[in-house]
Amino acid sequence: MKWTKTIKLPATQPALSIKDQLKAWRLPKHLRGTLRQERRVLLNGIYQPTSTILKPGDELTMQFLTTDFEPGQTYLANTTQELPILFENTDLIVINKPKGMKSHPNSPTETETVMNYVEGYLQQTGQHAYMVHRLDGQTTGAMMVAKNPIVVPILNQLLREKRIKRTYMAWVCGAITEEHGVIDLPIGEHPTDSRLRQVNGANALPAQTTWTKVHHVYQNTLVRLDLQTGRTHQIRLHMAAIGHPLVGDDLYNPRSTYTDGLLLHAMSLQIPLPFAHEVHSIGAPLPCSFPRNLRKTIQ
Image (cartoon, rainbow, N blue to C red):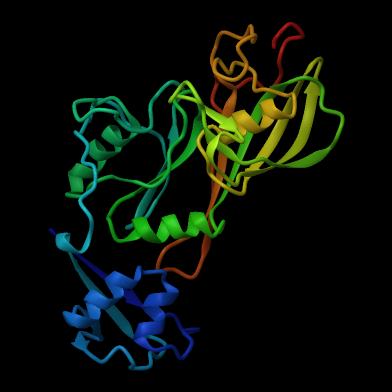
């Protein structure tokens, strides 16, 4: 399979060399080297040395092959359900994930996950779905999927650099008195259960969550959360660690009496679009399963 990416440089294009422009677009070093060595980067349709300085209005074309990328997971296409699309361009798609749907299959034969449905949608145009990030099964909201392997390492680097902003809404137990705060606790492996994670667990990695109180109803508080890192179960663990576990969290709030599942919603993504000169904000409306207020008896 082949992918061709042609970018028309804007009127504000700085005087960068082809080499530096590819680096500015966050193309991995091995891809930049391959494009140069095999002369698969063209300036206005002609190969030029990568030291050539670019000008506004130039067209830069990159040609990629399957062998340029590590083999990734493939997903069986499922066209029986259309997921709500919040944003789409030539490189990525953002869907509004429903409650109770897994992000990706755990076995090659699974077909009822986000990645299967996006694969089914994209197969109409001969494209495929590529995993970038995931949401827990009970979490709703904005989830990003790549449409080609070129942008996967770019988006991953933007995530590592904290350039992609992820904002969530959650109901937590307890009336929080402070207006905002930062939780900075490393997250690692759970000692006995591979499904779980643990604050300061084995092989812990840094994790930081910023939270802001929206309002509280009786003994529950609605909070807005911004992720500075993206560890598994980060929000759930961090809020439980400060004494305010999420309502409906069967893993880290086992005493919860709420039976309709986890109340966590990925409210928005702010993405610097690959190969573009813009940052796009994408919002996901609250689903019916996410109440705006909670009854006094809910925990």
